[in-house]
Length: 88
Image (cartoon, rainbow, N blue to C red; front, side, top):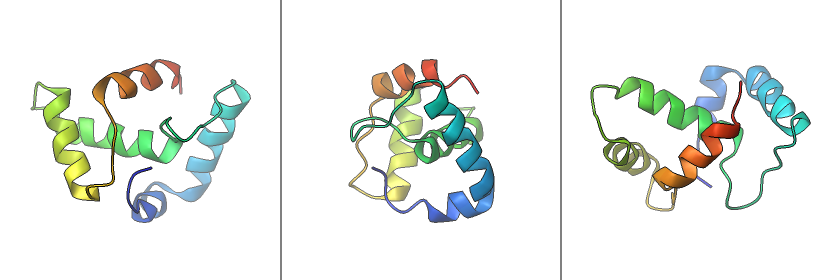
């Protein structure tokens, strides 16, 4: 969905990403094309934490998605909906 986030996977650790992804699937979360995957969620979580001084999720998303290229299409409501299911 989002541009190349391979560096995020390497930085966080592929094993940890895979464990989280496996747990999400075990809990019934199946990724479809329009849903945020584990790596994309981690990227956005990191972005929100790093930009916590900004009060608007819309501004944070604009900034985060600008960094990964114009192909990224993630809305705040979609993120919030997926975040509810991300119990980890």
